Image (tube, rainbow over all chains, first blue to last red):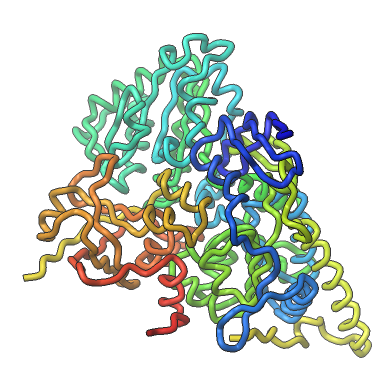
Length: 461
Length: 136
């Protein structure tokens, strides 16, 4: 008889909804029904049913086609590539568990890789700003229970975090927000009218790329100083009106997205948004939260931070110390400077989401991609290793966008014989250990490091 | 006469793109959601085409063929939006201003009609740029 699994965590976006109800077949192999999830979450769970799923590694042949290989072959290729390459870009991690990341980082430490996550093309700017000025923040639970002034700046949760508004920010009734939506005033600042702005009480249309100026004007208005007539296309009267209204709230929160991090100014946009939040705390309680995209990109930042002190773009190629310098150790810059010798992509798709010039550089290097599905990245890789889907076919720890850890759950069995990320990375780690042991045994006394002596791993291209 | 206009480009998420990602990068859903450029009806008219006609979008980085559509979310004239994905990234500059973050939003792009050009699939559009697409 089919059974219902309650309180499943959805592994799609940073909202990490943990109230999904899933009906699975009695043999635990098929998902029959998904309840409570948004359109994207439901599609993710239902995708496991799709026929034609790749269940064994694919290895590129000299003519460019793929043949089906074994996990042993793929692990051997990956380990050899990692050991021979002096600098491997190990990018991704946003769609896997914290446990798997930890094992991956151990490999990176041993082979001298560079670990970077999807924040590098997403909220990396936010992390730079947080390092510069700190962040007055809170959890989404506090938003639900307390917030009566909610600002969405440069983000569109109606499309990117579909249940964010119903679970935390607009509609829910909480302990001090018993009137739900009626008790809140919702603001949306964007360069175009979106589905989120349609739900907002006040829409402020800023000229594209003028967010810094407008935030600066908000700070100025909060202090009661004079403003020019128009700021980023917004009349000054509107700025004064909105800021005064924000001041009258008991608990305010700003959610910001890639409308700030991707436009000109980048980290400075976030910097001033945080500074505005700090200013508003002179008048009332105010917080700011980044709308993190991938479900565990926050987790990758957490794991890297507690292990090395930096949230992304961590260069471990010097072995005894971790380096971090945006613009230098960030993935796109590394690829554009042709600085890495091999690429190891896991749980992400840079083929679809990196600027093409970076991928042209990447396509010329030996490459291993670990991903449950076919994507532009897997089609450029020398070896594609499919794995079980974390959060659906295996569990693991993830961090929500407000840095709250939530355990994801296994709901169905993975296709027979498929490895999980943790199992795969553990096996690669063991093989790397063996290879490094062999290399060290061959060194004469006082020899140079294996990577100085080693050659670049040879791919099929 | 071929009309050509310059738009201020942004690349953003959309719910259809999200569903497409989860349906699979090779799925029709993903193709339909991401191989488009959302333009204001006035801009489509200025190109001398009707909605749902293929156009060529060009920046100094490269060019890509996508379908010009009228967005469901409101746009103003002069703004163009290609949902995040391999098509958008064919024209996005990799310059990061030392932040690691490429310029995904706020760059000019030329748009011209290309009614007879074919839109490449998600995998092919990347392979094509990397010189790995087999012709014929």
